[in-house]
Amino acid sequence: MNVIGICVKLLHILTDWLSDGRCQHYFINNCNLFDSLDNSQLVQNTAHILQTVTETWLAEWFVNNYIRKCARDHCLDNRVSRLFDDISTHVKLQNAVSALVDRRLNITLTLAWLRFAMAQGVIPGLYCHPLVLRVYLNSMTELSKLDKNLSVYFTAVTFLHIAFKASRNPLTDEMLDTLSTVCLQSTDVGLRRCLSARHSSVLSLSQAAKLMKVIANNSHSTVQLIEIELSKAYLYRALRCKDSDTDSICYLANGYLAVLYYTAGQYRKAIDHSIVVTRSHPSQCRSHVVQGELLPKMDNIIDNALGLAVFYQYVRTAALNQQQQTQYVSVFSTELFAHYLYSRCQSVVKCHEFTQMSSADDDQRYKKCFSESSEMFVTDVIVFHSVRRARYSANGQKMGLSREQTTCKPVTSGQLDTSELVELLQQSAVEHLTTFRQLEAREFGSDVTIVTTDFEALYAYKLGEYQRCLQLLSTQNVQTCIGGGGGRTSLIFACSEFIQLMDDDLVCLIGLTLLIDLSRKREPKDVACLVYQLSLSLYLMTQCQIKLHHPVTSLAQTLDYIEFARHQIRHFSTFPMAQYNRFQSVNLPQVIDPLLLKLSERKILRYISEGRSFV
Image (cartoon, rainbow, N blue to C red; front, side, top):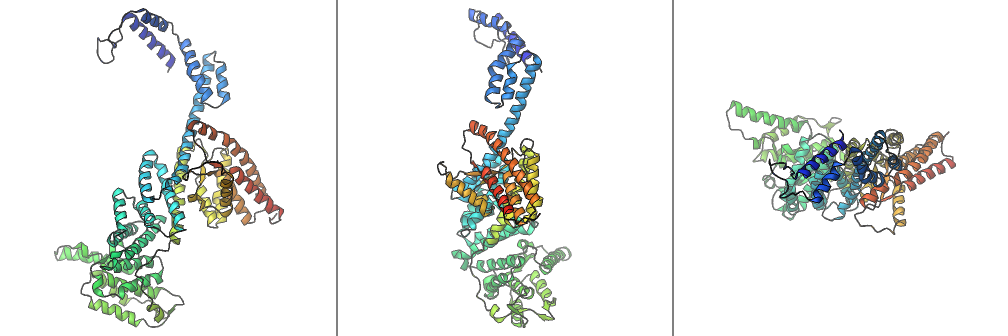
C-alpha cells in the first residue's frame, strides 16, 4: 500500500474543497463542515500550497520531520541512522525504513520483556506491608488484570515469603489465613470469614473442613500436602480458642487431627489425639460427627465402610421405599472412630516403645464404647465388625502399646510444627516458578533466551542433589544460554524470598555487595540485586563439579564458559538495560554477575591449585 500516494490524493481533494469554498460533511449530505468558509486570501494560499504537494516532497517531509528523528532518538543503533544519509532512490529509502521498523519491533519486544522483568522485582516489595492477607488479595486482583503470568509468579513469591517468615517465627494467624486463601482461591468473602475465624473455634473448624474436603477430592500434589498442614494448623487454632471447651469442638478437632496424622504416618501423634476422644465422656462427643467426605484416603476398612454404607442406603431407598436420609450415610461417631484409629495405630507402629503385650484393656474399652453407644451409624457397625475380624499381629501376637505409652498425657491444645510446611512451601514455590518460566519463554522467547529450569536447579542444589542439578538442569541451562548468544537472558532477583533457596557463599556475596553499596538510597520495598540465568547456572555448575570431583577438563570448559559469559554480561549491561533506564526513569537493581563470575572462577582455580581434581 502506497501510503504517501494516498495522502497526496487526499490533500489534492482538500485543495479542491478549499477552492470551491465547501468542505463536505462526513455524516450529513449537502452540508458544510464549517459554519462559514469564504474565499479569503489565506484560504487561497493554503489551497495553492496543497496543490503543489507531490509524493516526492511529502516523502522527504515525513523522513526529515519524523523518521530521521525516530532513527536518531529511539532506534539506538547508529548503523540504522546512517542509512538515512542517502535516500536518493526509492530502493534506498525503502531499505532504510524497513531496517528502522525491524529494529523498532525488536526494541519494543525487548522493552516489553524488561518491563515484565522489572515487575518481578517489584512484587516481593509488596510484602513490606504487615497485612499479608490484604496485600495478597488486592495485588492478585490487580495483577490478574495486568498479566496472568505475573499472578503465577506472585503466588510463588507469597509461598516463599511465608516460608521465610515461618522458618524464623511461629506461624501467625495472618500467614495461615493467607495460605488458606491462596490454596482455596478465596474472594473477599473468604477474607472476612478468615478474619472472624481467628476468634471462633467453630469457624476455625469450618475452615479446616473446607481444606480437608479439597484434599479428599484432589489428587496427590505438593499443594495438597500444604493443605494438609494448613488443616492441622486450623484445628490447632480451634483448640486454642476460648470457646473450644464449651462444646465438643475440642474432641472433634482432636479426632480430625488424629486422622491427618494417621494418613501422614505419624502414628504417635495420631494416638495422642485419639486418646483425648477415647478418654472423654461419651456425651461430650455426640453433638458432632466425623464427616466421611472430609476424610482423605486412609485404608481399605474406612473406604469399604463408606462404600457399603452408601449401598445400604440405596437398598433401603429402592427396595423398602423408605425416604433417603443422606446426611446419616457417610458419617462416623466421633468416639467410635477415635477408638478405631487408636487400635489401628497400635497395630501398625513397630518401634522400641511398643511391646508385644496384650492390648485387652483397649479392646475392652472399644467394645464397651460400642455396646453402650446410644447413637451410632451404619458405618460404625461395619468398621467395628471389620476390626473384629481383622488380624493385626506380629509373629502371631497382637501389637499393643506399653503401659507407659497408654498413660501419656492427652493433647488438648498445641502448635503446628512448621518445619515440614516450610519445605512444602519452598517446593511448591519452585513448581510455580517453573510454570512461570515456561509462560515467560512462550511470550518472550523469540527475543530473549529464557531457560525454564533455573529455579529447579537452584532448589536441587539446595537439597544436595548435585548430580541432578549438574546434568539435567545447570549444564542444560548453560548450553541453552550459550547457544542463544548468552546475552539477553532472564533474571533472578536477590530478595529475602529467593535468598532462602541459595547457598551460604552466594548469600554472603549479596550481603557484601549491599554493604559496599550503602551510598545508594533505597526504599524497604526495593530489590537491591539481580543476577542473570547464565551467571547463576555457571556458579551452580562450578559448585557441583567441585563437590563431585570432576576432572580438570570439565573445570577448564567451565572456565571458558565463564570468560564467554563475562563479555556477554558486559554487553547486556549497556544494551538494552541502560536504554530501559533512560526511557523509563527507573533505578535498576545492582547487577552482581561480574562478582559472581569472578567468585566461580576463583573457586575453580583454587580447587585446581590444591590438586584435588582428577585427570
